[in-house]
Image (tube, rainbow, N blue to C red; front, side, top):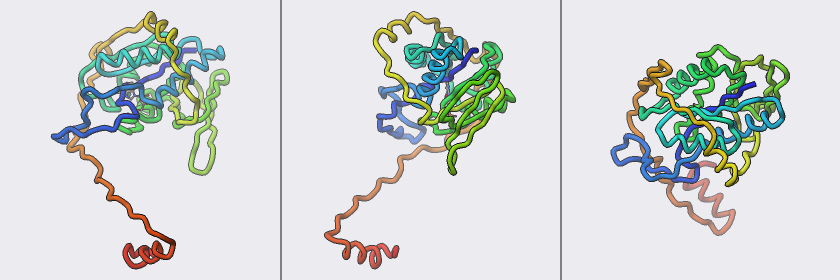
Length: 249
Ligand code: AMP
């Protein structure tokens, strides 16, 4: 069974992002970039399925600029067998990524595609769902447990009221939630091994996909600064302020 894992290169989650002076977007010049954290969880899950003998091959895919190769090398250091870069300098929106992934799925024929539930840069939470719709495959989003059983996959999802369990017939789409697993640390020997694994590059046009953006960003702005709080000496003063100043009780 082959598993395809799309991984996105995003601004590292430890970086405090800055908005460009002209409000056209976020400044990513000289900023540390990393694999989207939910995608690390997706790679880890796919690699664990391979280690259990359930999967036979794990293929990582990234769509974007040349530097996405680094993200793909990380995926291969975690344990993916090979990688595909869909290289473009165009801004990619979720629908374009979903179309590129659909074209790759048709070429690669995986039984399972495991994506992150959302990318921490655009917070769109759309690509997996759109891919499922384009392929007309079943989908289970926000997975906290994934178990392959023959030609089906049982997925536990964290929903408001508790846990929901779904059974999907393969091929299927799964998106990962935070508690699915804890990705392993990438070791130096595995980073070295990953350098020798195959990484193919294709262009959107090779896949017959038009990636022209369909949405226009009008403005990006910093959130308003929070004003500083105050310390009160005792509960009586707090109650008094809540009642007479804030007028909330
Ligand atoms: P989003 O819908 O943008 O929140 O992204 C959800 C998931 O789709 C991510 O966690 C990735 O698994 C996948 N994805 C989104 N954009 C890309 C990309 N440019 N390259 C590879 N995978 C992507």
